[in-house]
Amino acid sequence: MSRSHKRAPKTKIIIGAAAAAAVVGAAIVLPNANASQDKKSEAIDAKPKAFNSESASDVIAQLASSLGEAFGGGWYDKEQQQVIVNVIGDNNNVEVAAIQSAGAVAKEAKNSMKSLKAAEATLKEKASVAGTAWAINPKTNKLQVTADSTVKGAKWDTVESTVKSLGAGMADVTRSKGTFKTVAEGGDAIFGGGSRCSLGFNVTTDSGDPGFLTAGHCGVATEAWSETQDGEPVATIQDATFPGTGDFALATYDDPATEAPSTVNTGGGNTVNITEAAEATVGQEVQRMGSTTGLNGGSVTALNATVNYAEGSVSGLIQTDVCAEPGDSGGALFAGESALGLTSGGSGDCTSGGETFFQPVTTALEAVGATIGDGGAGGGAAQ
Image 1 (cartoon, rainbow, N blue to C red):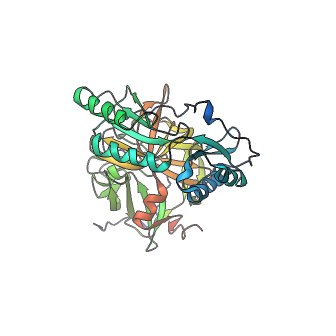
Image 2: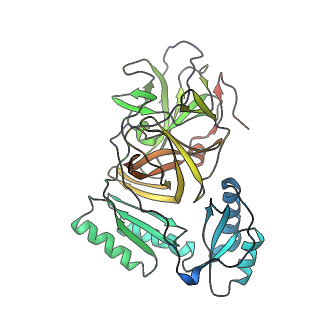
Image 3: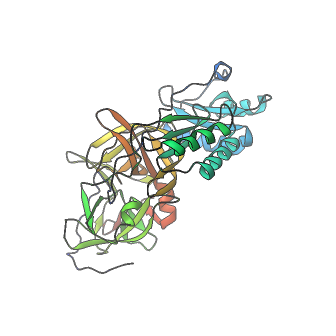
């Protein structure tokens, strides 16, 4: 797919509010993940450790592996700086002891991750209609299912009957006033084939060349991208996924001497250094930079979300309560110096609030064979 284009060497490309938008956009609002367990699921007494969001992600992953089918999901309580882990089963003293030994708080729950994932598979098979989305909500220990305003008649009946077939206490279903779409337009823009998108994070490819990640729905729109409308191309898409198992694309700069610093421009002349890619954690505080609405914050509400866009289903996304508006698509989701995601789609606005889905950066990097870090004339990959 590569194409060669002449341009002056060492052009400095600064990552900006990154918001891709090759396709039309707004999106769906998923429900708040604040519902509580019933009284029998109150936290078991423990002496929890204080965690930050990074260490919380590590301990949740460790406990998910060690607890097996007794693991019912976990999340980070940022106010208490605690990790909460759902434990399944009546005779769970050993599992509770393991949770407490790790410094987390054990909470009795009904649904195992195995049963919740089986319920997800049923939804995918029987209720994958445009305008729906679902994700496991560890705070409620249920699947959170949403149908937007376009899901009516027989489609709504299908969703409702499928949710009921999962059994009591397995899923909650709600309506959204919004419409489920990828987010359009852009700013801090790149242009190609009549589409306008924006950068997410600069990266270094496995061959050492400078490149960047953006949303997959931009990458499938056209190959060549420029810094100005109708300008000479500066980068070429090498890999793009959308819809399906993600919403991400890798572009490489046509000039290998391009400086591609590993930063996010947060506005007002301020930048944030990005030193690594990391996994998101439910409850983690995050920031999103977008070309339309600038810098906005919120928290992660669910992981591994499935979203049924009109263009097709996309799985494996991060769900947040961060707002987004048209033009913010493809933007950088980050926490501190860690790159977390690329804006895929969302709904609502930054006046009344909303919800947004993000492609995990770690998954995108692995798929395209790239690393976070300065590329080309900017240096090698960050360690």
